[in-house]
Length: 330
Image (cartoon, rainbow, N blue to C red; front, side, top):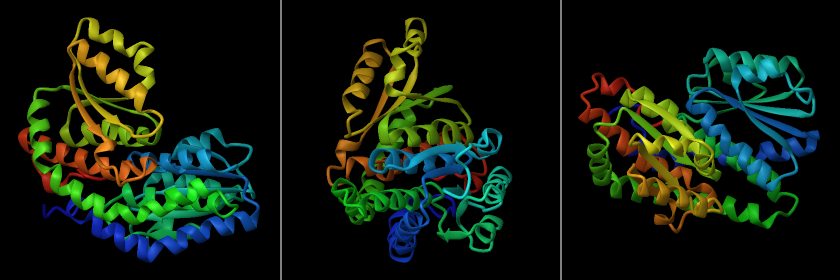
């Protein structure tokens, strides 16, 4: 509870502060992008920071006419997109602001003539000082705060020309801090129960789709593996039917499903039902349990439940140096 990197106890308060201090800047980025004639947005980062950027692309694609992509930092350099130029905007996310990959991507974007925005914890970091603009969020929540920044940008970019649906999602941010507080309290005991069920797991699959795919990626590859020290893999809900399910013929699997309340729900539920019928150990975190949270903002609250699972799992597995682990947010 006292760990500086266990963001859960402070997440609701930190998000309130972020919305108060940085929402105007994030919204202003959308206005500036329109004024500059930005046509393409690249969301970049590595590890947990990349997974936060996924929401920016998802919302951009859903609500705006911007071309967009969420690229791992070095991939932006190696791919060197033709559209990376004066009419492009690049978000570079890094908690420390010093991540080698993302510093390199930021410099490549800047040298290509693109506008740049740094998303970091500290205002004096390399990324914050070298980006054209920066949002230094001052929180250990290296997933939630950058995700909030790019989500606000994408939704505002759509709302300004009159997209009412985007405006509804944007308004949903006001309900998030209270929902996060409730999730933090209500999921504590369940996290311990689930951690006990999964204590023998050597491989953990995290399955999600739609707005929850980025969260599934984060926990499978940058939390389960890093902080529980188990093997992990992420699978998109519909993709389970195209090969991965064959493993259940001969081996039991340990599977954590993120069940959205958006359009992906029916397919994810089909995958849950089939996994159970084949004897898999199935854990489900359901966005519908938070009916006051907009379906497209569900990653903000489901991550709290997953945090508790990881904290209890690390303790039960006797992983040393818990206070040094980046358990909740990357």
